[in-house]
Length: 143
Ligand SMILES: [Zn+2]
Image 1: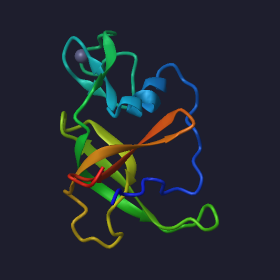
Image 2: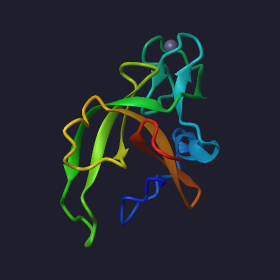
Image 3: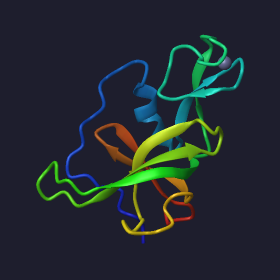
């Protein structure tokens, strides 16, 4: 059975921003993309107009594997919106680069699972109003 990615009762759409719009639309074809320096190969997130390593302006969004490892997480139990169930907010490290990290929702994991840190995870996208929200699930979860 597919994992329910629709964790949040309310989602605030990202701002229209030419620097980040690619990120929110990337999941339309099922691929996660990050700004990638075409000169030195460094991925930059949040997106930057110049490479933080070599200062090149030759940056473009490139797809990554979507595979990551949970670096750390927290369980949000505060109901900022009435009726919101507790959920996991994680920081994941992408497989492509040790400091390419994303703060994201983690779905398909029990809140009290003792093995969340270090868990291998992969991206899935929740599409809402032309935004593809990246969400991570345990690697190998049903599509
Ligand atoms: Zn560079």
